[in-house]
Length: 447
Ligand code: NDP
Ligand code: 2IT
Image (cartoon, rainbow, N blue to C red; front, top):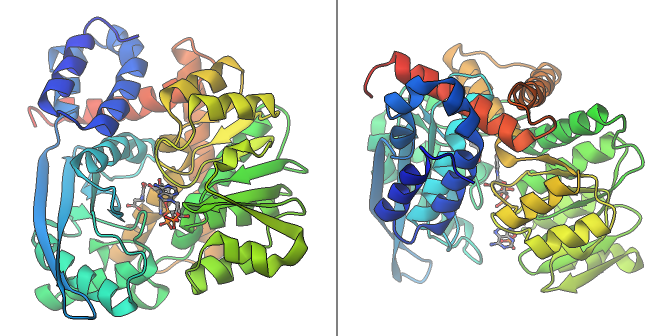
């Protein structure tokens, strides 16, 4: 239910952004949570803070022409939505996936505002990407696409303006090509203009691992708050990309057994626990599909094509692939199968009906904007290291990440308590993230 002051705001968002269903969904989820904060702080509504937050500060859409290896010309569409800079330069990743359109970029940019606020670090919210499909493309095609994309994007970004990073389809390799083209065009070695860089050219220790590790730390905190831990737990992780792989790595270090993971072709079940070295070889090094993992693992694992990984029973579920991957039915299945905790490594992977089912069943539910904030938090640490021309050790960086995740977890719980919704991490994350941005916007005047 929406607070009476928020219904017209939401209706207006629907009217002004037709067809952008993922953006509508992300806005609604935040507006449903922040009603109590408006009751306590009438100044937010008086200054139209919510209306302002729902409208991006700037949206850039551009043409990305490139040539494939056979000489054929392709035209893709590029996006950068600079949503909110009240707390710092716009910050958020770039997604290359055929499903990308303005509604996806806006949902991700909107989520990013509150996530970045929750980290407590000086970063605003933004997101970008393209409908380019990297699957089946050669390394040289990827390079040419990244160069063309940056040839337009460079004029909109900068270490004090807007700092992109990776997301789906954009990892260390793509960040390298993007940074290389930025450097070439501007003649500036401006390390802080993009994060997720390789360690040889200004990248930070633990940034590659950060989202997955951070999500595992967050769930570990949720489990501890309930008097238990990962030790001996059966865990399912969806996806097998950057977030999934490092979620699996940390869960294994914390004593859990990850019994299944997936990609868009289907899932693998491995009851003895995923062999992480093999998974990394197949997915990170050779960039193949998960069925290859099952084949090489021999009898220990099996591949199930075209089905949802959420049919595998588990005690902890870590959705780490994409938005809206857990339906209401999946949530019911998970609850029936004994699931006690969910940590969203992906952005908005659980549909609203699924969130309701988890919460009503008493499952500890860590929403993406809290649980996966370790990635962007470590990006902010990368910016800090770039600004001081310093680089920290792996151990120190991981300790910082663990502290940040503990702090976010604690603030979500404390805020949920303060507003009379104990244990509700969704309300805690939305209200706490919102208040910090809203207070900065009030202090900055009519921006
Ligand atoms: P990757 O590109 O490394 O991996 C994505 C994984 O998810 C792949 O296994 C991919 O399978 C699967 N996937 C993607 N889209 C779909 C789809 N439509 N249907 C089924 N499977 C899909 O991306 P990341 O690991 O970086 O990102 C995963 C999620 O985490 C995203 O929601 C992203 O926004 C979020 N996130 C990422 C952060 C980061 O630092 N990278 C930080 C915070 C959140 P396939 O290869 O078959 O497409
Ligand atoms: O969704 C996310 O938080 C990211 N893709 C990471 C963004 C970043 O700037 O590191």
